[in-house]
Image (cartoon, rainbow, N blue to C red; front, top):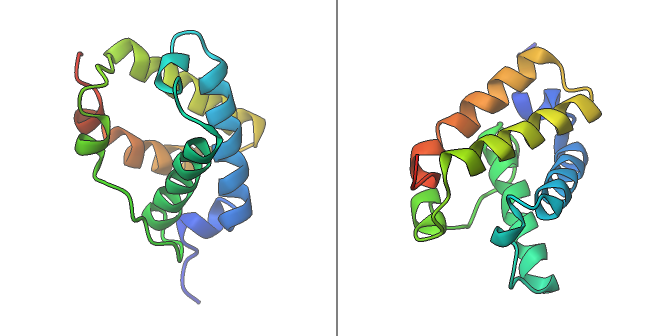
Length: 124
């Protein structure tokens, strides 16, 4: 029997969606990060949410297909700082705790996330 994918170990689509929903809510309510959600209408926020779900689903071995732009293009000009990045990371770990994500899976997800840092953070 083949080993389970990270996608399967994270609880598949519904769990990934719940985690993304919680993370987006926390980030949009954080005074340090809320500026990145300003100006997004309901439809735009739903699209952003879906793109995040699809990206995580695909990156963890799930059946989804991410159709968004690459991270460098998506975040260019936003001026995301190292402090902003760290605030997001803190929220990710808080969501991991809330959803009781095991340490092994946390490390694997964070390896994926940290590989994106260079394309997202413009001001270290």
